[in-house]
Length: 208
Image 1 (cartoon, rainbow, N blue to C red):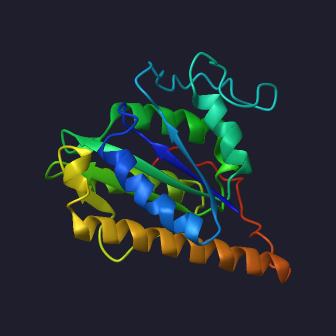
Image 2: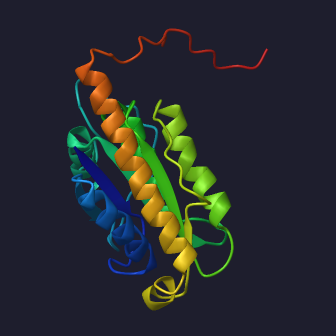
């Protein structure tokens, strides 16, 4: 089993990475393979709604950034944790651009796999940021993994985050809950429990 952790910060080793690393330690202790992917500081396109990501062109049609690489990794992963810094009480613009394209062009790589969102902030805006990221999970039919409080850490630099003992505790509990759910899903598969056969035919695009 493998969990893909995505660092939505431009800073490779900043506060968001510090929080994700705390989760990673627990997952590894639970014999879950992990990989942290950093979006980095390179430009990431917004989704243009061009509709070219279809059976004729799997993945996003634009190949000049990291998005298709992450979709490929997502296909091999069993669970996901997306981390974002908080800018203006909101997730980073780069993680939203990335998730828009990843879930539009590669939704099947995420469907029915557990997901969790975490946020890192100096002070405020964390719950609003987590709420935004959670919506990607719910529209992709993904079980949302929770912890023992809001999935957040506080600090202006990594050294501050390491002093947020409650925040680090929440990250560790999130890792344990993710590992537990993954093992439950694996046990279900071994007992012959299959994915639900859901309906996708009605596409009402107006309000009556």
